[in-house]
Structures are given as C-alpha cells and as structure tokens.
Amino acid sequence: MNKFTQKLGLTGAMLFAVAGFAKADLPDPGVQFEKGQTAIVITDPQNDFLSPKGVTWGLVGKSVTDNGTVENIEKLFKVAEKKDIPVFVSPHYYYPHDHQWEHGGALEKAMHSMGMFDRRDALDTEGFEGSGADWLAKYKPYINNGKTVVTNPHKVYGPESNDMVLQLRKRGINKIILAGMSANLCTEAHMREFMEQGFEVQVVSDATAAAQLPGMDGYKAAMVNVRMIANSVRTTKQTVKQIKEQL
Image (cartoon, rainbow, N blue to C red; front, side):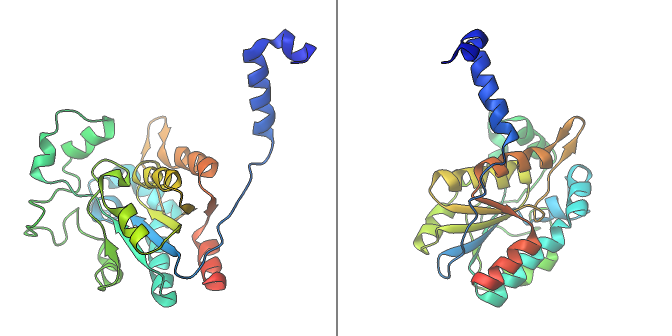
C-alpha cells in the first residue's frame, strides 16, 4: 500500500480501485458458435408476457414494443429452423398446488395474485389453448414442430427447478444463445445458472424485455448484469448474422 492509499485507508483505496476499473471498458469475450454444440434457449415465450391480452402487458408492454421483442424472438426461431439449430424452451406454469406455497418474493406474490401462467393441472389441458400460459400464437409452428425441446416448467425464475440443464447436457450443448422473458427475472436467472454450470452464454439483448415500475426499470437493470456476467451480449441482428456465418 503506497502513501496515497495509506491516507485513504483500506476502504478508500478499494473505492479508488473500483472507480478506476469502472472507467475502463469491460472485456468482451464473445462466443464462437459450433455446430452440434450450440443451442437457442427461450424462456417464457407465453401470452402472459408477450401478448397485449396478457396479464403483465401493462408492466412489460412498452419494453416489449420498444425492443421489438416479439419479432426478434421469432427471428431466432426462424434462423434455428433454417440452420437446424436445436431449440430449448423453458416455460413457466403454475398449478393449483403452487398457490398453496406459504412464502414467496415480491414478484412471486404478484404473479400468483394475478393468475399468471395458471393451468388447471400438469396433465389437464382444458382451458389451456389461448390462455396466458399458452405459447404466443405465432411461435406455435416453431415450438410444436416435434423437434423443439420443451422442458419441465421452472417455478420461480431459474432452471434449478426444471430439467433444462440435463436436457442440454444430454445433447452435448455447451454454448447457449439466450432470449425470452423476462430480462431481469427468468432470463437473467437462467443466464446466471448457465454460467455457474460452465456453459458459454450469449444473451440477445433485444429479444427480451422487462417490467417498468416507478423508479424500477427491469430491462436496464438486467442489461447491466448480463453485460458483467455473460460471455457475450449481442442484438438479434448481430446474433443472426453470426449464426449464418458460423453455423
């Protein structure tokens, strides 16, 4: 510790170092896609998030519209179909027994109270068609094509409660192109767990969106975190171009 940092004290020196790091550009490792090892993962491509009739549209609609999220997710589905890239979907469903949980976080409580992603039963599809838990209609040809992997539902935000990681590992996937809803909740939670599990992750920045609340911009919060954690953050246009060149 030099004389300057001695005068600052340990806490001051740490702040000084952090401030200096903040002025520097963060590394941008990037992801090199490889055939057979790369997959597209989409979180919650469902009506309650992405349809104007969905229960969260009043919270996420502006962000979805501004980012062109619906259209950009479809572009990823299309290029996956064209280039034969495996697609994995991590859905969000709540059954009656899930509403018997005795505690939950702020947005968990909100989701339960508004009936978000509700289904009658894990094996009962009555009332499912066109419901908030159903896929956005324009995505159905890509998801219900007999090839797309639909995992068990995640129950809070991350894939720790479903079989997504198992499904990816069993297919030899180690590079993930990540998109879907919502940016600072399920998408970010999946990104964090994938990184902890040793995957390389590229987040598609405009193929996601988030709630905007007074004093809380979920999308901006998510983009700060994914830029600091993920291997790469790219737009849909950049990602599609990269896929076409590398796969």
